[in-house]
Length: 153
Image 1 (cartoon, rainbow, N blue to C red):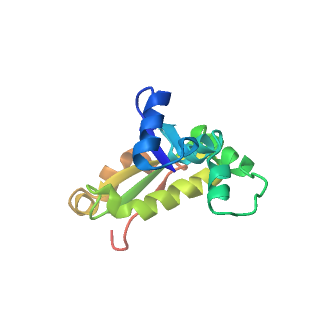
Image 2: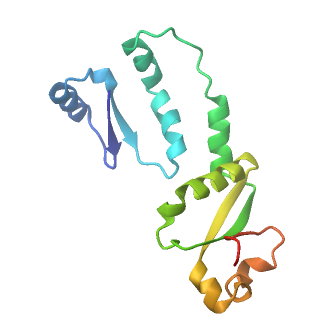
């Protein structure tokens, strides 16, 4: 199987070249359009039959496709009912990947309740210098806002 980002129109001849030069069957070359939500990719790949190809290649017993829950999750993710602001205080907020597990956990928790999460990153040193009230004023008074920071702040 070979997938290629579809930032431009992918012709049949390009797919044939990829198939020939990568030693991949033509039916296993998938142009994948660029999407805003990575969770849409499995749905995009199921339409042209990727699941069937994988089942055949691995000699697995075919199971009924059960993507309705996944599709519903993607729908909730793309059209949340409400946005919840969360102020996240940390030492390394200038490197958001430092908190990727926290960010994704909050995103998934919000998703389960059809809510989008608006994370507001606050550096812990700024809390020490300016105080929490000043930095969190935009989210502080909102009853739909959570504040997360290390103990001692």
